[in-house]
Image (cartoon, rainbow, N blue to C red; front, side):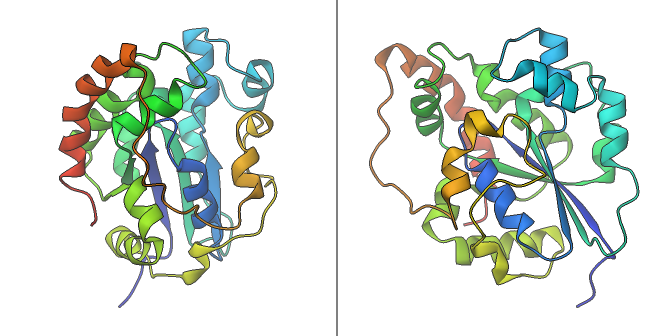
Length: 239
């Protein structure tokens, strides 16, 4: 089977998922460059939100989305066969024009909303549906369908799910994706010291935790609102 000279994969995920571990997995492939949340600075600049490391984030990336997008579509270095873009769906604000998504291979990383809400509530007490990125993720998928993987499925059986994901992306399978060296990467965003401690200590995907998530009662309605959106994407997931 022949493969293209290079592939640009845009992986769209909500927060409190295994998105950074997935970035490590793809980054372990030879000939791969990864891009960590390239629209984060624009998101903070446009919304005025005060996230940990805000000043450093704004200084590290373009704050205007056209420049950020242009960098994602720029020619790749010699020898690079895959560019993996890790995106947060809530960073794709309404003012961002979306025709550039036709120039990348879009994929979707989902997680059950009960698990997302239970995790998010530990770091931010009152998230909204838009904070969790479910409406944005569904909107992107409807316009630009692509392979979908569920975080729980990946953690249960990465050696089964990831080869199927690679096939759907037009990539040869590489077992190097199942393990990586611990530590920080030069390609990690400047926000890594605030969020990446667990993945920096990891050497592979963590085992799946079958324990049911504990959702604060006040956020049960948020889970219920997100569930139909999750279900729409989950119906397409690689099993």
